[in-house]
Length: 131
View 1 (spheres, one colour):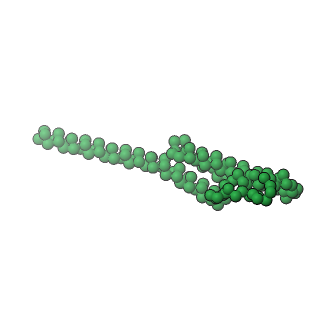
View 2: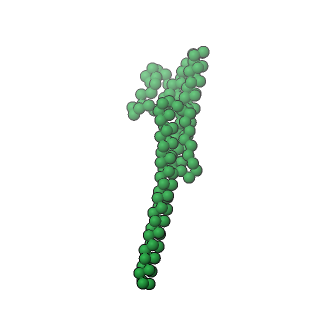
View 3: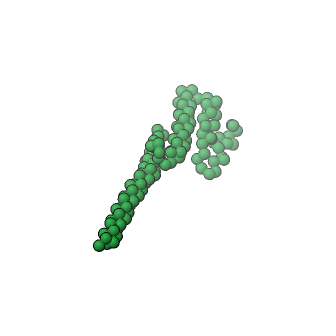
């Protein structure tokens, strides 16, 4: 009688507790996965745009997402690259209207500051007598 009812009640309590713990673990794992998977997706989407030449990308993550520092570093790097390319475009536009050796040197210096491959020690214009 009494022992059987107490044992049965204990099994119910243990079963319900386990079900609640499983549910809470499941909810936590979904939440944790979204804090990682969402940012990875957002970063990938923006890097895909960058690969296609879009320098206006901006990776925007939620305050508690993972990879915030990484996304901020990418945003900063792309902004610096965008500024350099704006400078280069501006100099090219000036050269279109009024070619000058000074502007060519300025353009060469900007381009030489950008590494494009491992052996980029051979800068543009090296050996042409100009520095």
